[in-house]
Image (cartoon, rainbow, N blue to C red; front, side):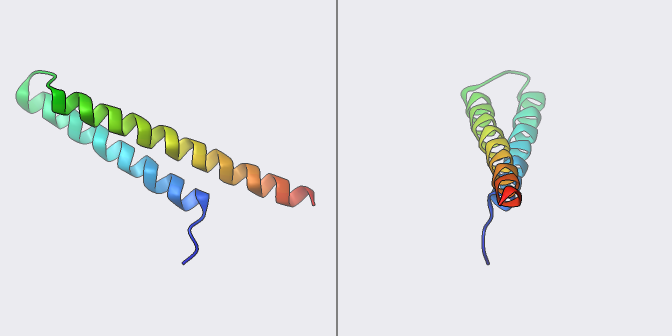
Length: 68
């Protein structure tokens, strides 16, 4: 199976949403912001950022291929 930037980007975005959800649940359960919660938020930020960049890269590739 060929992995396109679009597919990888969607996977990264889903993981970022999942880590954000887990961090929210952790704060609601413990009623404080511990190191684990900050770690989850940092990982979610990296995943969401990478996912958005990969999706944008996919559309840039598609646009450049249509010009040819």
